[in-house]
Image (cartoon, rainbow, N blue to C red):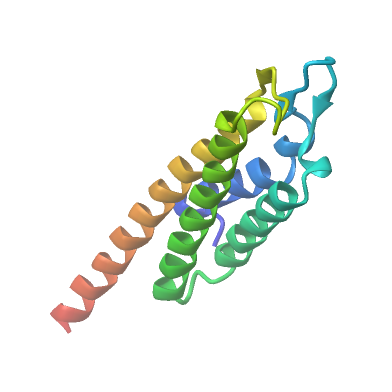
Length: 136
């Protein structure tokens, strides 16, 4: 059901994970070349995996518990991706030549925010269904 607010949040996560990493660079090398997510296998796979899990959980609207669990797993995968970015940007000089960080490194943070909002709305829906069942 696309009219629910958590579906909108999850759709935003799908767009963040599937489109923006290939538009915005992750970082710029000292030579001035922009490095995109397609050039880093781990980043690309985690971005696509996050988008796929969010898309899959949109269509699991009948099973709110599984949708909530998938949201949490997606948050964890985005934290792992963010950890990789922090490690790559803070590594010793010479190991990773990053001269300027790109806006693509902020995409996991935005995804985490929208996933938390979606999980909050899913939890609210679950509480509403339980309260209605209590009256029967």
